[in-house]
Length: 266
Image (cartoon, rainbow, N blue to C red; front, side, top):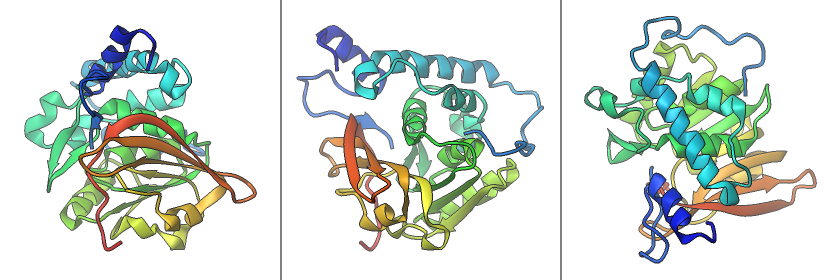
């Protein structure tokens, strides 16, 4: 927020929120590789979406300036912005929506799920503060777009999707696009992926009423988790969870958001 009410309303409008005082609102959503980056299936081909993707990146940069007070700086990490300018978001949305792929808005991907708006993808990735060689876990694969962004920055990315058809499609899509450092699992992400723990970073792309204890346990000391916390239909907050070297945990709320709920047997 800012003291200037007009500016506050401005950034909220950018990310799909009503102005403060207009009722409860939230965003509707939903690293470079260690060593040479493997060739992607789409790399080097004629990209008719390059201009639209650059426009998307410029929009993300503008929103970052507007949300300076909330995120603590005026710009997102350069590596994250470079990846946002590179990953072909149009490959991760239904074909009939590709013309809208680079607008700063969520889009439906089937089964009641959405692909998050680009600014939120960039912000959540930035908040993880991943370093080269990181191992990252994502809960909520969806179409695979966030996993692709993570894979460009991390040495290894693991992602869990509870809706089997979405998970299977994402696995095939990521493989087709050349993301060999991503492993997709079908299952309940609340419990994480113990076989590959601990993780340097964990990102959850669905809202939980609380921070799942199994994920905290699987986060490496010194690591970060980014998760939307709150109840469905109420204000949720994008939250950064930091696990300190002594095992202690601190949490910080960043922005109001609205994600689909985290589902599963928990």
